[in-house]
Amino acid sequence: MILKASQRGGGQDLAAHLMKLEDNEHLSLHELRGFASENLKDAFKESEAISRGTNCRQYLFSLSLNPPEQEQVPVEVFEETINRIEDRLGLDSQPRAIVFHEKEGRRHAHCVWSRIDAETMTAKQLSFFKNKLQVVSRDLYLENGWKLPEGLKSASERNPTNFNLAEWQQAQRQGIDPRWLKQVAQQAWTHSDSIRAFTTALEENGLFLAKGDRRGHVALDYNGEVYSLPRLVGCKTKDVTARLGKPDALSSVEQTREAIGKRMTPAIRRHVQESRAAFQKQSEKLNEQKATLTKKHRQARAALKSKQRAEWDRENIVRASRRPRGMRGIWHRITGRYQQVRASNEAEAAATRTRHKNQRQKLIERQLSQRRALQSQIKQARHQQADQL
Image (tube, rainbow, N blue to C red; front, side):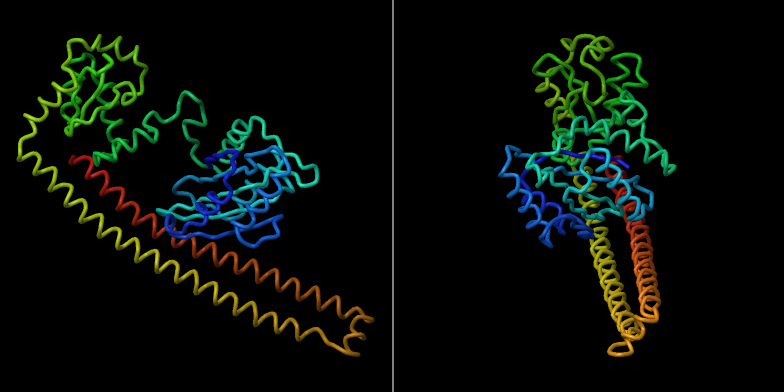
């Protein structure tokens, strides 16, 4: 389970983000502990109000818990993980909120603690929390038998195709998957033994080598968008220069754009537009299926919630009828019969809660499985589009 956390303020913005249903297919406020309020915004207002009696500006500690994509993880595992983390970080007994999100067939959780100790009016110190969370994350993978990510085995083995926000936004502006860009560049880099072979391998996939404005190596796509070559291949600038030599012999960015323009005939541009139009049509169809499935799943959860509430109310009436009142009730207390009835009622109520929780979990797992099947089609469509481009 990947664990990411940060100390932060801005409780109202965080509450709005966590409770934004538009960004998620399903959302539930699972727990509010230690707050007087019953909603997330007011709860975080409490934390902010208390923090004003201190010098602390980052009065919240926000944690996201992301299990492996294909694993069905029960609520209990999330709760146990959160309890383990708060014990390790010294946040036990601090007010906290837990929110579950579901999107694209995946379920993840957010937990937010108040860092302010109301008794001492000081903020909890969270020294080296990233290192501690990494240890917990590695333990979770090993304990649950999940495949350990390379990045948790060793810092030097993290996935080289990871991209930052700027790279993602740049690629999205061009309608190209940044993961595909990096994979193409890295494959060409790995299997080429000369600058000529590397250039040919790039051009076979619509990328063109050039000299950047700062005299470094860059790559251009068929739209003329510029990408840093060391970032694409996952190497340092000096390593790229060592293999390819100085870029002085290469064409400039403007010269390369001009050459691309001549090679991009109207027919090729038409093919690109046709491919994008077909992908857009397919995406709209898949999005309609996603909206229909989400609506169906929400209705099923609401129906189950209503059914369980009615069942709980009926059983409560039956349990209440077993407790006699008046003189008979006093006699039951004297004879000890009252305690027996009470114990029986509590056991039945606990069994009902467990049964309802299991029913909810089975429904969620079944729906996640259906959503993953649709997400697989969406991913396949994206990969096909990237290959065509």
